[in-house]
Length: 232
Image (cartoon, rainbow, N blue to C red; front, side):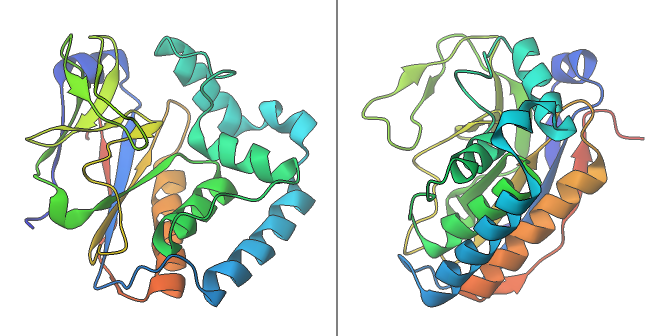
């Protein structure tokens, strides 16, 4: 796969000049349903975040607030469709476990929970770059993970796409066709920004996700880059 490039449509850059995403890769991983390393990582991180956060005060957290404010601008009610990082953290703070999907997905979900940054993981070999951050075309179809049939997107919905399909409804629902499976060997991680979220936060979230995947699945970590809607 060629080097990562991200294009921002002019409408997105104009409406959200402070938006950015960070992308990183890890290759030659071995994905399992579960293993002892991911179990131990979950246990340690659940203890850590429960000591750091209180579920009743979570909405006052600056990162949570930034994504909630951004959701309202996207016409998404963040109390009904929560940003994924907040949703994962909130679940753990309430005493629940995170779902066991696979070692790779569980690993990057833990990074999302810890940083409160929404993160996607894709099977890199199913992607067709370059990537685009744009508004959906009215009626464009999308099949998210767990969906039984396609849904039609509205023209005000922000998406991440490659040259063949929508990869994610920005920043909370990933496509089924490009998801990580037990056969995945090469992974691409995306951390989604919002106004008020720094490039350092996004890069740090991707770095942590790749570190956790490496701990649980092995592999070689590649370069991490940040792509801004208004590059300097």
